[in-house]
Amino acid sequence: MTNKSAWLQIEDAEKDLVFSFCEDYKKFLSVAKTERLACTEIIRQAKEKGFRDLEELYKSGEKFKAGDKFYINHKNKSVALFVMGTEPLENGLNIVGAHIDSPRLDVKQNPLYEANNLSKLKTHYYGGIKLYQYATIPLAIHGVVYNSAGEKIDIHIGEDKGDPVFCVTDLLIHLSKNQLGKTAREALVGEQMNILMGSIPLKDTEKDAVKENVLKLIKEKYNFEEEDFKIAELEIVPAGEARDLGFDRSMVLSYGQDDRVCAFTTMRAIFEIENPKKTACGLFMDKEEIGSMGNTGMASYFWENTMTELVNLEGEFCQLKVNRSLKNSKVLSADVTVGFDPDFPDVCEQMNSAFIGSGISICKYTGSGGKFGSSDANAEFLAEVRKVFKEHNVVWQTSELGKVDQGGGGTIALLLAKYGAEVLDAGPATLSMHSPYEVTSKIDVYMSYKAYKAFML
Image (cartoon, rainbow, N blue to C red; front, side, top):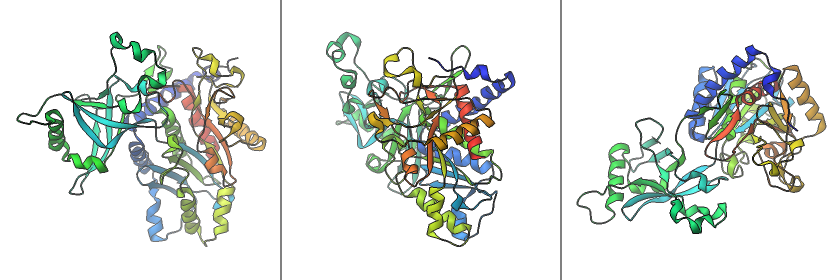
């Protein structure tokens, strides 16, 4: 069973919009390679669209009015965008919530070492990845370092044409007899995911001369010392820009589409919301790939604190209004789902699978066997969403994350549903999810934007 292609359900004029929309999408992917960079880019574009810093209202005590547009920057890793509605907040918000972190390699606190005239950098992987996929591909380094003088140093190496890149090495096929006899999970293990940094020794240096030369170059160009690695935040991601995929250029190949495809489409959707009845909100959260924990994840009190501040700025404060605003909200949890791959048919049940190019996919529940770890949307909310999609010509399909007993996964949905809000997962199908280079269909990207915009109107 295959859903009808969304390309066959739109006019030629809209096809042109799909392709032009995805040109901007590819630029976003190429710039927003980490959650910090995504946060910065979302805020930059929001400011251009007239969004103001909500923190300024916190300090001034100024009350907002309907139609006002705000952003809140949460520790440079999570963002929320708001377009204030004509109805009171206690009636609830229309929320689309995505995440802006992606699987990757993180640099350890004591990372740099030398072995056999090679300098390498130790890492710890972040999120669910197949480690062997990160071997021998060009990698870039992004992040923040503070030196002993307290200066913040932004690090971005490996994206510009003149930059060097880095890599994890792998064993040559000629000597891989034992390695190839292992399971894919064991072919490379965490402590082998070390980044090759250099091979030229520093003259007149007896011990760790290659490592010392790397440190010398780092000091000259970036002005920080080895000790500063201890407090640095450096992430290793695949280098390079997002690219068109296929002779027909119908797909996008890029790192980080889970879940920056939903972040971009949510951002573009809320930019086009004007004077809504209910307040529209776009959430762009960190830490989803490791359970949404930490002070920038959806499981933190960030959302409750933000709603408390907003109710306070609305007028006379009442905690009951905060609780009602959380309970009465309606949410699309904007996250990708697995796209059916004909080369791996056994893990999916085709009648309930999402297909690349068939529109945005709604997923009633995620979780794993027995729906554990899931938010399960009710029929009343599903009917409401279907009506909205139909009224705005959104092409959509339904899906599950693989066969019942095959595996599973989760999103931020249950973390918003706990307040009593209506929540449904909705996003584009993706091939090669969590790999260094994921695949989406441009028509699904565009339909996600249309769906999120219609939902927030």
